[in-house]
Length: 173
Length: 332
Image 1 (cartoon, chains in turn brown, purple):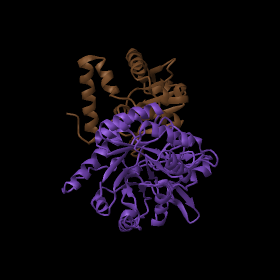
Image 2 (cartoon, helix red, strand yellow):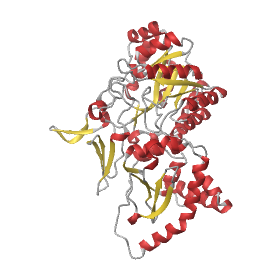
Image 3 (cartoon, helix red, strand yellow):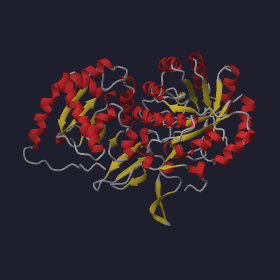
Image 4 (spheres, one colour):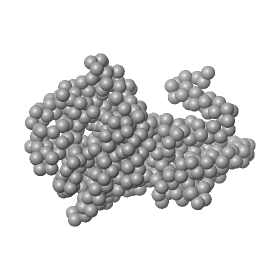
């Protein structure tokens, strides 16, 4: 079960979240533009939900991600959780699980059965997004890491090791 | 002699390529419409995608089976006929059908393409199966998941076609092709629209204590405790209260998946020609993991080695698995 539940902000937490979002935004914009260019076929599977607002909520990070997969006006931005927009659908889980789901390294239904993944709002929108992403070839995480050269790939490798270790109950070495 | 073909699910072109590369002998898939029983949003193939997928699969020696396994509403057969025409033009290796009218059209119009009888036809007796074989030239029957292995062995002796059985995935035991539970709540038909619990009618509500309710068309059909594993939001696997069962109970079936990995040798010995993995709605990750595991197991058995079955419980519904009626009719 996902243990994170909305709670009142601690002093300074809001400022940290806002700064994190500002720092991330250029990267997110670059990532989403690249994905849209290289995987344009995914938009067809989204059908009417190209204009749905998705809130992707990595529970252990200080912010959430707002995605509106409209090919005419793509939105992918980090937002402080307490200031997140009203979303049509919310997808919540640990960051690395969400990353592995996008890359088809984990199965979304299995994560739902185990209660590691939560969805709320418009279920059809979530199903369409899942199917659209699952039909993408290659690894989105590796493509993104590759945009930042060897340091990007090294960070991804370390994140994945951490994820595997926590999944198997081992400590990160 | 059983061929023990591995029949694998593909909900998208990428999943199809994953199944082929993982060792599928055949993949089954459907178009993006009501002609198949996984008519889910964002899933399935356009004709162009299927054309490219057939080329990919055939280049690697894998067959492509096209699911046309729903029932056309009376007088509205054009969609199914067009789908059959398109599939035949693109070179699919077989059609999986349930409806007699669809079977008859294909038998007359595309006699060169094999017909497989879908589990949705719910043909479970030698008499019923022989009828489809004699009337439409059906070459293979996908048996409903209600038979024991001795019963399958006996049926094999009495029918003139191949047998395919499910070995992994959803354990849906309603009288297949006849279930109207979804229709009752949502107005959409599992059998004619291809949607069981349409996503547009599903909603999950998380409560403050960490429990989660799954709802279909506004009706709560289950509520999972904070640490309880979840299942699909289908009515047949919902948990309900009744005056004599105030705590709630599974009135029809339980959220659990079929896993016959340990029964493979007996199924092969009983004459089962092909093993089907359920899950066109699942991810590439599921397809890769399950197909690889069963490819290795079947190859081991065919080579006379003891099969080393990978642990697949993490991929099962409710993280529970059963051998169902294949082991005993008293599985519940």
